[in-house]
Image 1 (tube, helix red, strand yellow):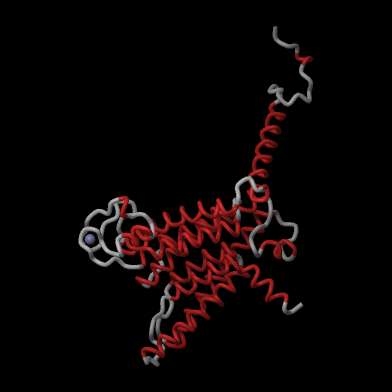
Image 2 (spheres, rainbow, N blue to C red):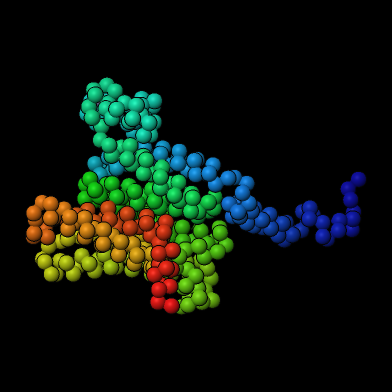
Length: 328
Ligand SMILES: [Zn+2]
């Protein structure tokens, strides 16, 4: 016998005859789920060392894939097919010879088939990516920010090694990178329910007070992109006017659009400072060793900007806050 309408109390959460109530229940369940996931790192449900080990293993595997990207992307070859081959003899590398870092060590850095020496860049990229993934996991814990930061450091690592080898920063990475930064700017504050990005608290307490979080986050991204891309563009333009030579490609400008949007203006200024400082130091050392005095030597500036970007992501807030504290 079906229950009479009066039998259902209005506060019964399972009264599906009230669509508004149902939406409310679903909304509450969803937001409760989101906030539960967001506080996971504090709840110690999954110990941090375990998360770090998993991040390290995945990082090494992704690093192995990055080697393919670094080798093939500038040559405009497919990243997916064919499977990895020895660059010397062309033999397909078996899966058991493709274990990150370990295979290189077991095989003594040589191809199993033709014994040609394999570049140490391969295990280096794998180990570095693993290390960076552990560093990000360590810093972020199991939060919604972690996957975004992992994508960021992985893309920057690819740019660093491609620029070092080919002196280019491919659009195939920087353009999607800019889109990624904007998506992260919208998604992370929404998922975490807090500003998260380094520049956002200051913006919300200052010139963007009273603005919705997502809008402030996007404006912060725009300011950061203009600071990053704009200053790189200005440096290149000034150098060109002074010396009459093109010193900086637009790749650096696009890369810093992406980095600036993601990191915000404070960390972007730190990033450029670190990049210029380390680039100049290395440049001076190299010029001194080669006896060159004409300053014409080209350095892959994207390498130094990329190192600065990763350092700014991992330690930037602490450095900038410490520096700002010196003047209080
Ligand atoms: Zn071979």
